[in-house]
Image (tube, rainbow, N blue to C red):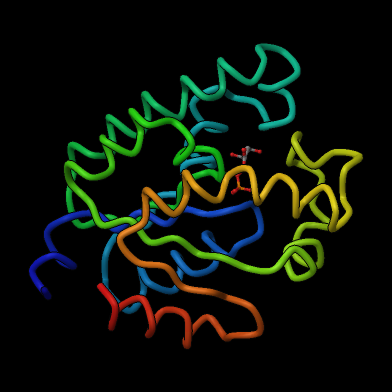
Length: 172
Ligand code: S3P
């Protein structure tokens, strides 16, 4: 099992605000593996914010960027990859993840998600929709895809990043 951790990639998936970025930073430290933040990579490559990419080119274009980046990342090993919240929604992406990685689904309640996303305005899908009802509906819609993709599921509500990371490492 340790072999899995150190040869394949670990991919974190889940809803916006589930804690993917924070947890991947910490995991990357304790496992001494490079961290990749997919949103950040796309922003760098495209030279514009996520909001701007959605505005200028639309969501499908952004989703294609994600698919292309994922394929590129999966050629390397031993990375902690923090996926954007939509990456696990495409079946072809999930198939790609499984080829060379273990998929960790982070979950959180809509109330906790709202608290975590409320001050960040670079999430086009939540713009003007920052309330628990919207979040909860979107989460329910996505849940089957997220759960089908996951090798491991960890709830992050009211846990420290250390506790979450430990749970992940034990379960992997
Ligand atoms: C999205 C999640 C965002 C970002 C984009 C779309 C989604 O990433 O990729 O705004 O569809 O859930 P985070 O999950 O890192 O917020």
